[in-house]
Amino acid sequence: MTPVPSPDTSLYSEDLAPVPPSGRTWTTWNYAALWISMSLCIPTYMLASSLIGGGMNWWQAIFTIFLGNTIVLVPMILNGRAGAKYGIPFPVFARASFGVKGANIPALLRAIVACGWFGIQTWIGGFAIYQAAKLWIPALASLPQIFPDSWGLQTGPAICFILFWILNMYVVWLGVESIRKLLVFKAFFLPLAALALLFWAITAVHGGLGPILSQPTQLHGAAFWTFFIPALTGMVGFWATLSLNIPDFTRYAVDQRAQARGQAIGLPPSMTLFAFIGVIVTSATTLLYGQPIWDPVVLAGKFENKVLITLAMTAVAVSTLATNIAANIVSPANDFANLSPARINFRTGGLITGVLGILIFPWKLIADPSGYIFTWLVGYSSLLGPVGGILITDYYLIRRQQLSVTDLYSLRGAYSYTGGFHRRAIVCLLLGIIPNIPGFLATIGLISRNAMPAWIISLYSYAWFVGFFVSGVCYRLSFNYKKQVNYVSIDY
Image (cartoon, rainbow, N blue to C red; front, side, top):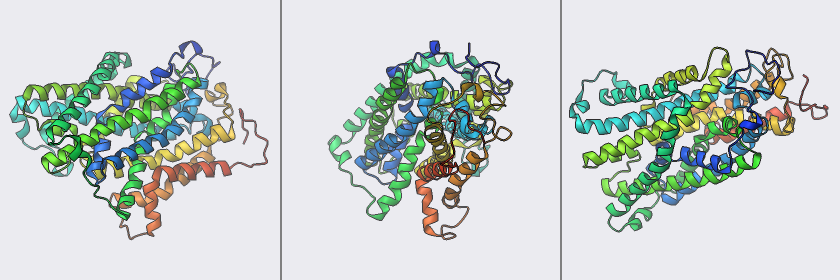
């Protein structure tokens, strides 16, 4: 089944094996459809509307989202080339630069972020169920409080969250194939639901789009740039996870053109269009209710028709379930499997993802725009940017897109380095993370913003960019320019 001869069992499983040419069947439109499906989700809507909640006007928010997704498309396509060329998933690709064992470091960083996204999506789906259920069972909204106040978790929503979590885990147990019909349902229904919400916003506000689009920005001068820079970083961070593990999907591409064109067609346009709907609806809520309601599930709860709300919330839950499995289970399952291919399979990796997804308290992350953008999106981009910088520098500037597939699955091959760890990559990874630590600690309140020079704290606003370039440049400089390098088998 695989072209890898006699691989080490500690590095190989059927899930991690290279996809043979006969299995590479994804075309341009498969990748475009994948991105359209993943982009049309509630977090995308919330991403856009949270910018309105932060003070931007409609065109500033849309431009920020379009620019961020155009930027992240570049590493998406670059990293995707390795998957398309060799048929290997992200954890195996990372072995070339981090070592056959050291690859677990970037894989786990990416997997933990996926666990966070899994938790956020599961909370959204569970809260949608709660919004519908409390209409028919009013007592659900007044159950005795059983969680500490510091958790910020009410009993009714918690019950629905756990029930939806169990449903997710059941689908994981059945396998990825069980989600295909849900993805088809989502692809057809969610665009229609989004357009219906847009129609509601236009008709509910007297004067249609005019008053909505004429709302002025609340950010001027330095205040705008103070918000825009980290917001742009957050937009890049939104798909920073997929920009790393995109080989998990491009390994099935019929050719390089298919993955590159498909991603370009599917990612920036679909994100921007769906974000535009979120911006319009959120702006309308400001006019109708006096404050921006950036969570569509909360907004739907304000409608009066019980049957309409129930249908809408059921659709949100089913759509969220489909997105969760496709975007937040497949990749971390591979990442966790890379730890011990003989012991961890898709099911086990999915269960690990599910448990960690609860432990991050997702309901607190999306409670307000500052937590969602500046703590969550920008925070994890400071970890994933350095990984991306190293992967791209190694593959393009050091190895010139040449890898030995056999050695990627061998403990004694070119990528074994020192005990399976490439120390240069690990050191450069740390160097890319360190500059963003002070700003992160100041953002979450662990240190005062006056504790260090302002320019050091401000680096966090550029977290993904800082990490990407610092780690990438350090990695490139760590090699002797005059050294004759065999780009397939580098000796150290």
